[in-house]
Every structure is written in structure tokens, then in C-alpha cells.
Amino acid sequence: MSKKNIYQKLHSACIEAGSVKKAEKVKGMHFNPLLHDAVQETATQSLLNNGLYPTCSYLTEITDKNMVMVVCTMKVHDVDDPTQFVLVDGCSAMGGLDKFGTGQAMSYSRKYAFLNLLNLKTGIKDEDGYEAKPFEQDSPEQSVEEPTYADDSIDVEDIKHELKNAETIKGFNIAKEKHRASVEYLLRNNLRAYRQISDIAETREFQLNNGQ
Image (cartoon, rainbow, N blue to C red):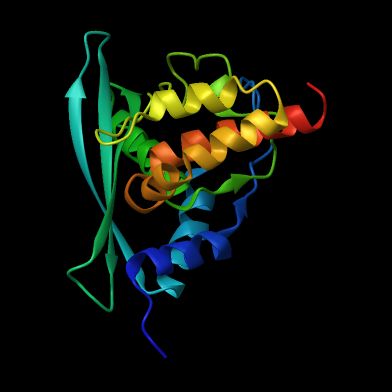
């Protein structure tokens, strides 16, 4: 039996991990929080089960709003072939300038690196941190809106625009087939961009199939 390459292992880990259920709302929050520990436990176990080991490095910067910005880069190593790895970079978060701020921002950015790596689903679709009202200054977790993650070799915005603006299911399927090779490339090389496109595609396909 041939050995799996790192992308086959990552595919298996994604399927195995499945989803992470959000916690219950607490006073002062406008949405169900997605806890770092729950995400890390689910993601790490799935990766380890498939011969993958994640490490993280961080860049920090003090912003002009007297907050610390932390950017996480996650490197996932193939245990069976140490020369193979996958990078998830650009996941960022902000924290206050206190003794807890940097650690909280590191946890938040690492949490979204895991989510992006494995395309983890959450248990509550109608409530998402990206759509929530901003945190208060003293909130335990500070977030920033995730930017569009472009790819130098593929026009990600063009693909997203074409799928989002398809007027019929036939037109949607034509656009989907047109960009299939590019999307498959992103799946192998740029999971964050792939996730953004797949989210838009799923939403628009559902709308068209339901006459919206």
C-alpha cells in the first residue's frame, strides 16, 4: 500500500475533524463563542491521527490604537516525511496592552489558523464572530475582520465575483466548471483562498436551488 502524501493526509484530517460546536453565549457577547481550547483539541487530535504535526510562529506589532496585533503562521509537518510541510499564514488578532493581551491574541489567531487549515465547521451557522458587533475594549478576545486572502497566480476575486453573481443554476455550474482547475489548485496550495471561494459557492448554490 502506497504512503499518503501530505495533502492526502490533510484531506483525511479535514474529514475526520468534522466540526467544532460553539459554546453557549455569556453576558456581554452578541454571539456564541468558538473557544480556542475546543478548536485546538479537535484539530490537533485529527492532525496527529493522520501523521501531521503543527507548529506556530508569531509576529507582533503595536498599533496606533494602543493594541497589540499578532499574526500567526502555522506550519504543518508530515511526520513520515520531514521535508514536506504546509503553511497557513496571515491569521491575525488584536489584544490589549496588558499582561493578558498578547497571549489572548496568540490564542485567537492560532484558533483561526486551525479553522482555515481543516475548514472546520461550527455547530451554529446563524451566529458567527465575523458578523457580530465589535468587542468592548476590555473583552477577553479581540478580533479583526479577516482580509481577503489573494493568490498571485489566480484571480481569486474574479472567481468569487463570478460565482456570487450567477443568475441561474446553469450559469453557476458553467462558472464552477470554468474555474474548477484553479479552485483545485487553491485547495492544494492556498487553503484560505479556497475556503473563501467554497463558502461563496455553497451559499450561492443554495440560493439558486431555492429560487433566491
